[in-house]
Length: 406
Image (tube, rainbow, N blue to C red; front, side, top):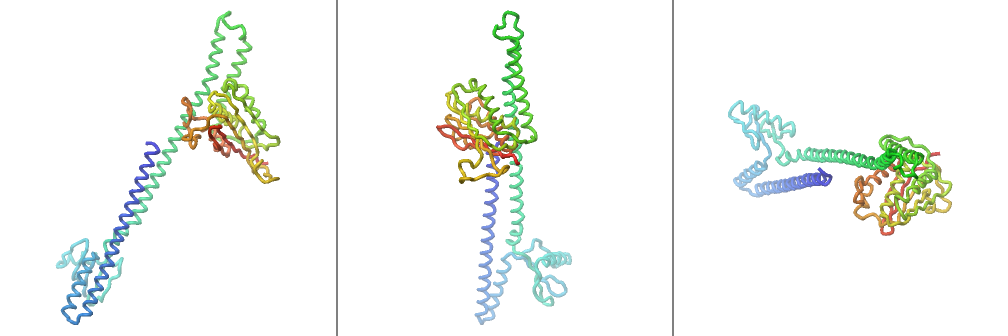
């Protein structure tokens, strides 16, 4: 079941519980109003009996007052001297008071009522045992029902979150497996091609391709395979972070890109601006180069072979934006790397989800590169990465990495 269905189920359950609480609360309000009306009616009957000097009229008022009390639903047991029960009203049982067994049953009920409410009256004349009215008895269950309902929603919510996390993890690893197969495919295909060339009979191999050229290309393919395996090995386990020289990091990235730029993006120019004196960052050089490669390849895809400019800028956070003379102590700042392309920008419906696995604007893409970059930057290096601007003039991705502590 997908995220939308689970969210809908939780929303319906929450609304159902809320509706039940509202309906039950309204019933309680009505019961309290009815009790107020009953008390008012009792007061009216008492006033009628007191104001009428006719003894017969006073007797009728007392009888009516008794009827009102009995109609309220309050459990009542009337007992006299000698532990004799005279009458019972509104009980959940109907004991036969003319029998010893009925008397014992009534007294057991009276003792249960006495544990909640102390009896009233003179034991030598008549003593009245009473219980809670029906609405109060139902009200006693409300806190338990509320706790049960909220606990149910909480448990379901936790279960949904855990299920979604498992699904997202499985989805992420599935995309990573596809990405691994894709990256391995290029050097492996190249190696297969060179093996075919080596199998050619004498005289059929092109003259310009000698053993030296073939061995050099095969060595390069093997280096690519080693780099790919090393990257995926690191992404799946805890990584030891060390001081990384930012200038050397960008230089390595530049060498890699300039050697492949004619094939990756014909007509694309690469511009870099790396100031001197940048502090080292805390990270893993292999994974950081991979993250930056993914950002640049994303920029190349955004330009869709039309040519343009990719600008990579590195700065220390606060440079050019803080107060004059403002300084950041070593080990407490950030190094910011921004990648700006001159492409068409990220579609609005994808901008908020661009770092999620599987989200891509390419028809044949798997949407893994930026998701891996986010994992490398945020989970492994404790930094941040975001799409700070996008539009018809291109997109700007900004990566912040923590400085190494001195």
